[in-house]
Image (cartoon, rainbow, N blue to C red; front, side):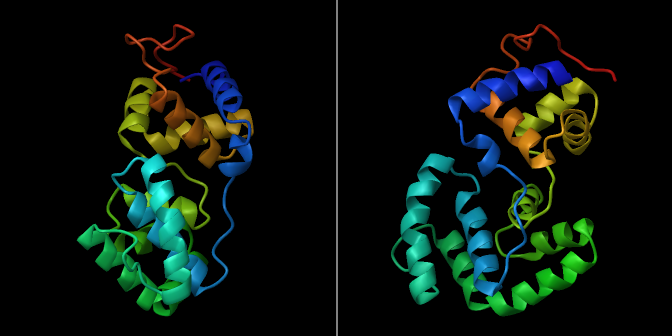
Length: 199
């Protein structure tokens, strides 16, 4: 993907969602154990689920987590429910582990994320982003765009970030949204007619 293509998609995304740039800005790290546990819980809930569905469930679940420390009857998936309750009940220890990992750099944070309940090899990047790292989540759509551009997801997003001045998280979201909306890769071509970027 070229910088020109990225700017084209970014314009389309901002027209679709004017508040996008603010929403996808790199997050600050969690401030306490409950803040940390809520961010982990949201990612667990959201994994493998449409965000529109997860958003409605999260509205109910977050209140229960804050008030009681448990999912309660706000959600029925037994595996996710168990994992979220585990994170909430052990949030102080998990948060201390996160604080230690944060001092050791991004790789340590990503490694820590994968040790948490219900967090896998792809989801750990989603969580790491929500915990304050400026990186991309290499989901299937971004993998396809990166493969056509001749590199990894992180390389693609970092390159476009450096050239555009946008955060890696913003670049990640723009590309993801372009794919989700069906704008990228229509009949093997981007809207601007270029398939690769060798630079």
